[in-house]
Image 1: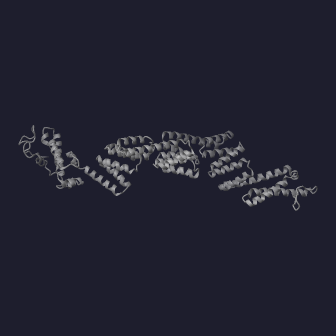
Image 2 (image 1 turned 180 degrees about the vertical axis):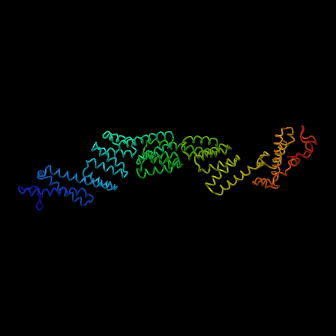
Image 3 (image 1 turned 90 degrees about the horizontal axis):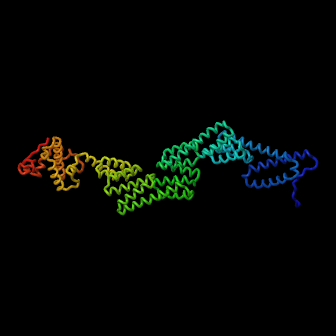
Amino acid sequence: MSSGETEMEVNPPAGGGKEKTEQLSDQIIQYISFISMVKFCTHASARFKENCGKLQLWHEVFSNSIFSHALGKNMHKEVSERTNIDAERKKNEGNTFYKNKEYTDALKCYSEAIDICPTCAAYYGNRAATYIMLNKYREALEDARQSVRLDQQFVKGYLRAGKCQLALGEASAASNCYRKVLDLEPNNSTAKADLEVAENVQKFDDMAEGDFQKGDYRRAVYCMDQCLQKCPACSRFKLRKGEALAMLGRYQEAQEIANDVLQREDSMNSDAIYVRGLCLYYQDSIDKAFQHFQQVLRLAPDHVKAKEVYRKAKALTAKKEEGNQEFRSGNLNKAIEIYTEALSIDPNNKFTNSKLYFNRATVSSKLNKLEEAIEDCSSAIKLDDGYIKAYLRRAKCYMDTEQYEDAVRDYEQVYKMDKNRENKRLLQDAKLELKKSKRKDYYKILGISKTASDDEIKKAYRKRALIHHPDRHSHDTPEKQKEEELKFKELGEAYSILSDPRKKDRYDSGADLEDLEGGGFDHVDPNVIFQSFFGSGFGGGGGGFPGGGFPGGFTFQFG
């Protein structure tokens, strides 16, 4: 040792035993106090470094054989007892905070007790209970497991481990913990009750698996709700419910569940990303859905469901585009065939399938297969009740097939969803046609189209008047004569309107028959109209029709 340095005296002199013993006791107390100070003041880094130097000096002093000889076993016992007292004090402080529901402060105290005495199972058990109250089940489970590793007879440790495992959805592992408790304490009522809960959770989990396989997604949601009541921290149950909701078309709810798991629990959870991708796929956001499925397969290359849905999505997209290409090329029958194949790829994709039905309806309408088009539009609307294009296409087909009431109903729905001028006009036109359809259809009576020329109207009247003239049916039954008389009269009415351009225009515009000039058709004399075509001496002056019938100069009076 160089000159100028002071050597610490560690050896006691030969005499003065009592005085030296007191000095030694003071040194021991200083040593213990200094250890405590270092343990609880490590946050001050500058002072911690300085204290470490002092701690090393004290260590050297107490390593001296003289101190060892002086203290021996009594010193270690005193240090141990003082350590246990400090740990118990921290535990008791934690218990007070716990009872007052101040769980964060309780957690700090239990952690300090564990730092002082890391071999006490009860301290880990208490901290596990605190973590449970803070809903930190994974941290609680680790402490509970450590407690039973330290003491395999620690019943509370097994109970808390089971509670954590149940909350996390590990029903089978929780059941094993409760059975271990019952091995130690066969009459433990808590273990018996919790074991029954865990077994019920396992049953609902198994039922949900079967429901998924059967496609009963509504029941699967119910089963997952039952599980989540007892397992609130189980992300697997949450995401299974989200998947079932997506299959039911409840996409907003499903996405909220997936987003919650990603934001609160695990930002790289492959099942949560899969559920989000599933919702996007079923909402026809194909590009975004593909990105999600690709990310899932990067995180979990063996994710079976992601692989399957990704394959279907690509096949469906390709087949739909193939059908569109055939339609644009004018290969209408081929387009129908391809759209039909696409519809069989994924029956669960409602939005895409609704578009496929609509596309097939469009092709059918161009082929004048109006009933098939109506049926496909109805299928599209069933899958997507807000599909305006499908309503418009079906309404047009209804108009073309003269199903005006159905057309009005569809146009009303369209106008309710989109109150623009064009939709209003379509609705008004449909209502007009419906009103007109409830009158006598003079075009149908004459057997002509609404675009028939004047010559076609005359030819149609001449042909049908000869067929339905009452004299031609004079030998029929009274019922038949009455029927032919009515038809003959209606032919006269039809011709009197459609042969007059002004009346025809008003009739075509939907004017009521009673509002037309003359106040109705009681004044129409079908004989006059008939004679204007065939003359009063039709039939050769008494010969009538060949073979008997109209006598020359006839006048048939209607009742």
